[in-house]
Image (cartoon, rainbow, N blue to C red; front, side, top):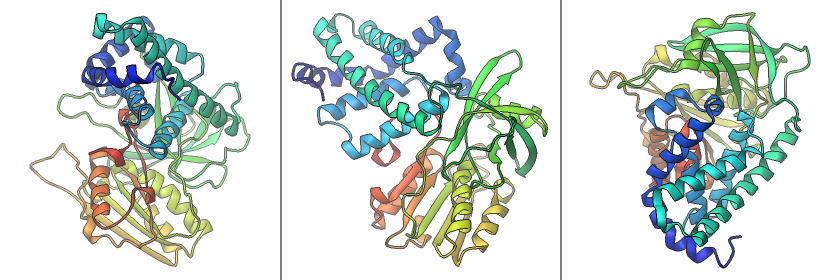
Length: 403
């Protein structure tokens, strides 16, 4: 809880911080990485090149400040934000001691941008906000690490690529087995792993990929879409490396599975809605349900560019065939006027929605915002909609809160 002395200061200065957030983010990010280039391994170089990543952490701290003074997301919504960030931090191997350095650079950026307006009292109030936020994350991350069996040990584990399978245009799956011969970790369908890739001449890079198959056979499966740069943006360096250079017999380093897009109830009808490679966690969830809850009612809805770009389509159909009640719906867009833009358009009015359905979403943020709005019009409440976001959007307020 924010102290009585800091609360009025945060309330008075939050609008100014918010107005200059983009500049503060740029100074924070550029200064910290400029003086600590080893941290570049934690961030997507594609996102760095486009600038989309810079407002991530500072935006989350500002949102937390708004929450503390009653001007931001409510408690339940902010718990969702904290959980998602904590899960992602664990997947990246973030350790508690790194929060001290991050806090120093973030608060230094606030002082640099706002200048004399940052009095000692203002600096102390924002330092309090930051450490309240950091303490919540550090505590939750410690529990997540313990549940995953990490507990201060090396968070990475080496896997052997058993097979590499082409799933669709620009999409391949890797089936992975622990190289040490010990069992693969158990996980909840809908979770993801981080892949630690050594890029020749360019150092390490980390990327998260959803597990695209339910736990089975002592292996893990990830399905990777090759990221093609558009409008001057670079191609995805990690996805390109995995597509071009990784073969059966090669080794990859993976984190333990993490993530909170997991089933919360056992018997309610499911509505799984995805776009593009967002189908991957849906495939794992559907596989699990088909194995363990075959009488459960499931509807799967997917949007993609075209049938040849639709990954795991055959798998989804096969999983659904094992269910007593399954409906599979596709939307494909092949708009010649937008050859490089995938919007994931679907008509939510045509989707059958059970009154008690639990909804899961994964895909580009604009797609999920549009789907959520359509579901709201049909009476589906926010608490029945779960979602997964990858990229810098995960650090900002969650999709259901967006205007």
